[in-house]
Length: 152
Image (tube, rainbow, N blue to C red; front, side):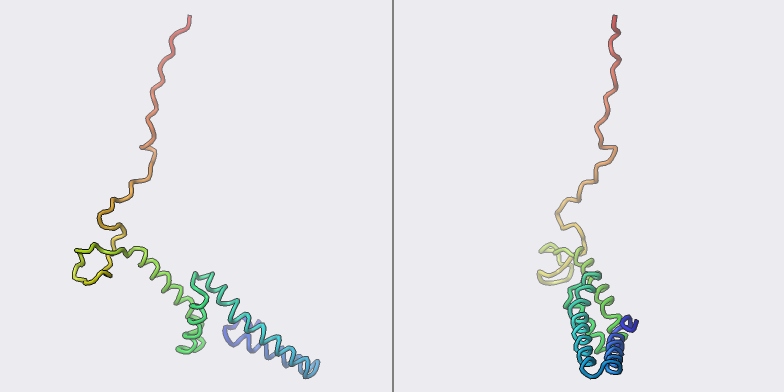
């Protein structure tokens, strides 16, 4: 149950497992328990968590590791807890804004200089807007049925 507490929970539960092994089985079993606990924690913390969190929030695993480390250094445990959601929100906002940013026309910089001026117009200058999706009004008109000639 301690493993659900961020950052310190796994350490507390691992230490508890080593102490129980030391008291019940002896020193060598406690050392093996310590090796296993450390190996599992390292694999989980440095490999599994970044991949799982990165996939869940669509952020690169290295960005997850760096965000947790930076959040922990800057604001302690609370910073490490909110670091990944903050990076995910930032990544989503930047991706959304970049999807609408298109290069502006060369002669129209609007006070901005250089070739990196961006226009927030989602349709590039000079491009025709997309035609509307076909609907029921675009269906071919049905011909009126003619009366068949009377049969004799």
